[in-house]
Amino acid sequence: MNEHDDVTHEELLRIWSFRREMFNHYSRALGMLMLDGAWQQQRELRAKLAHAEAALREASEQLRFYEITLS
Image (cartoon, rainbow, N blue to C red; front, top):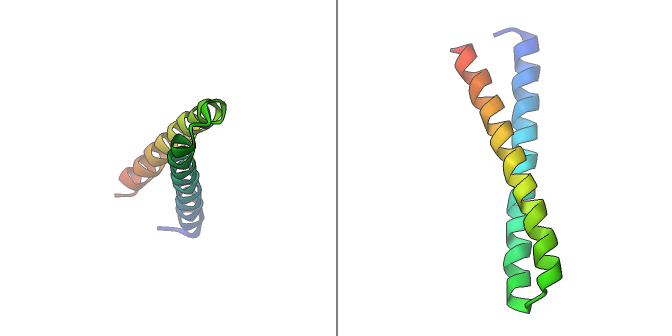
């Protein structure tokens, strides 16, 4: 593996980790809002959660593809 591959792999891992943290953050926040009954905030947060989930899925696929091409 050359230096460029290391940088790319590290970047993909960083992006994946960030996306996972965002998804977890929105999930926890939504859980807390459900206890409060804040319906408008729940709707907005559900939209953000759906976007974060899609971004995490995409980052996971990119990372998986990258790792497969290295082997």
